[in-house]
Length: 437
Ligand SMILES: Cc1ncc(COP(=O)(O)O)c(C=O)c1O
Image (cartoon, rainbow, N blue to C red; front, side, top):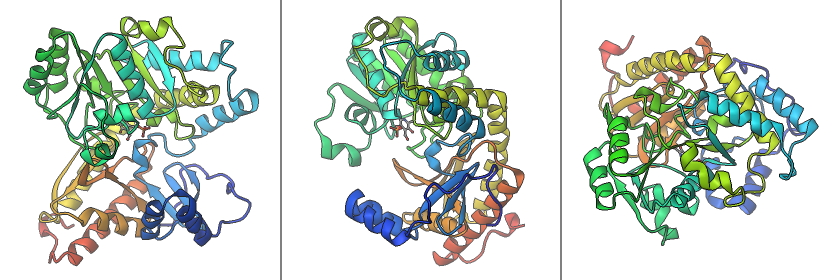
């Protein structure tokens, strides 16, 4: 690919181009042989710069980033976020946590302004998993001991969050996890009701509005409304995990907006970083937040809500608002979904389904092993995508909302060629002619 970043990548972060072989060897020696093996399979590429939708590797190769695990709704190094973080870095990056600090206050206010009504209490943390942990503790502090999440749901991998992340592969080595957690099929309100009804007044339900790592699973229409109703009737708290779906990713500010549901707590992360500094948050109704609100030491963490992270969060929320990122994600998402469907329909035997909402799009392959091949073919053609942690056959696309038409076109060309290369290698003879324009 020849096109450059949407906005210029900055100077290389290291004085001289790194020796890629040496980097791989250091990974092997110090960061894990598994990670090194994975990197080697992807060609041992070493990334050194980024800007907009582009990541630049040592040696100058450029990659269009349609992955990023859902972080880069604003692309890499959005200029307004970088400028805000740079100012903060030069002024006051970490706080004493004794005095008041204005940027955390502004970031909390900005988040509350764009959140569903009533979610005006904000607890900043450093990662999505920490947001889940904080929500679990807040639920318990509100007397709720029965946690309920969905099969294939993903809420992070710290010990408490992992209890909610219903994947035995990640859970089993660390058992026993938290007690009192139940998993119900996603989309099945009656199963959820049955669990809550067994212990009325004791439940806390944690769900994604669309399952991301579960393989881009959209719930049946009316699901969130029915879940909220069940929670109300049976005295359960509702926590909606918007870490991947929030801040415009689904073409609405929040996934819950599709049904106008207002949860008791909402988890935010990924895009809140502005693609620059890690930060996440739990938003809560005042009544539910009371235990944390009253006692600031009940749940705290040294680096949580740092001025640097909050500068990124504040600038990110403002950029999403001021640059019409939400409607842009909706329009771009509709176009991309259409294009991805068209390309995949050429190989009906290989692709089981294409589904998505906004800029969260999944391609489910019909067989095992295809996804890895497609990922490699796309990387060869300068496009980065992700697999799904809880769905081995689902390739996930989470591009920035600020893509240009030329970038959309480049992606489409690469996808067509990658699918064709894999399909032919898999023994599929011809693309379906009707869609092959
Ligand atoms: C819905 C959801 N919740 C929680 C998490 C965990 O976030 P983190 O990786 O920042 O801990 C993720 C990460 O992919 C996620 O998609």
